[in-house]
Image (cartoon, rainbow, N blue to C red; front, side):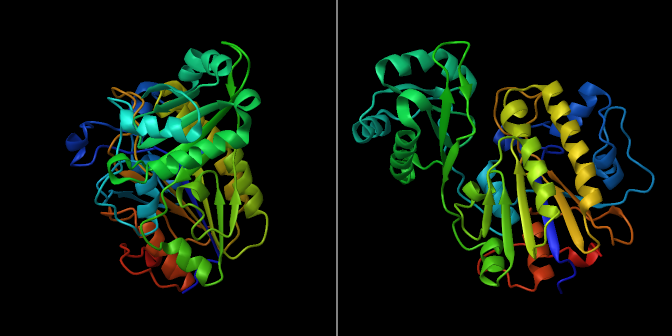
Length: 396
């Protein structure tokens, strides 16, 4: 059909819009990331999201939506049996995941895993618990520097993270150790979604600061996705932020690393100013990493406002035959207990300058409508064993 020459998918990482019916099974009954932020703050300054219909989709607090929204919007349920970053993004591009990734939040990693990691890396492990990355560096950074040990920790997500001081650990050695950890955690009993290198600089407590040289070692998608189909058909597939890591480079033709969510939107705007034919797929992680997991409502609200300002710039740069889709991959309700992701519906907000009218669409039972819509637009077949049906005819 090729209705649109360029499609932009922007993932507001963790911006859920209310608990799914099975949320209690995940320990998340009553979670509502956007709704609870609006209730706590009363009102936030997001004129562009309001214009597109985000608040019409999910009104809360003092915000009730606009009379004639410019975008089409719906609520998407997750079909996969999970609530993590990887399965959310994979599902957008057609993959349904039945077996969730493992988490080690309560116990840390098993002694057998740690022993193998120490032996193969040649470093003693310290930490081995669930923690905030910035806090564990403050706690153990000096010990790591002074003893040559290696900080290993996890979180509420399916992840093994290794911190390393760039001056004393050496960045390439940190990456080497993470590659070893990725190989070890391919075993079924230790299978985590991602291994993440978390480099930092500084010599003592109060001075430590994480750098932008983070690197994710994710599992490859369990099968071909819409991204593969687009690339194989000769279309551009441009990633911004951690999209390339989430898909292990599968189906990506150009990757752009971001230092922050604001930077990611600035990169997306620059890409919009250039010519390409295909998909620009952006992840904005700070909503989740900086504010959701840390249960910081005000910080999360301010991040949404920063996004909205750059959204206004992007909307002005969009061309007549561009389509923008805003969505999320799960929830991380900053008013909820603990630090875990929350099992929530996510928004689907679509806009094009040539769209004849805005308004509500029917709610959907999978994130995969995004990939299916993209596939139909560019006239490529959905890969075998993928899910999702297209909404393209609702978006013209």
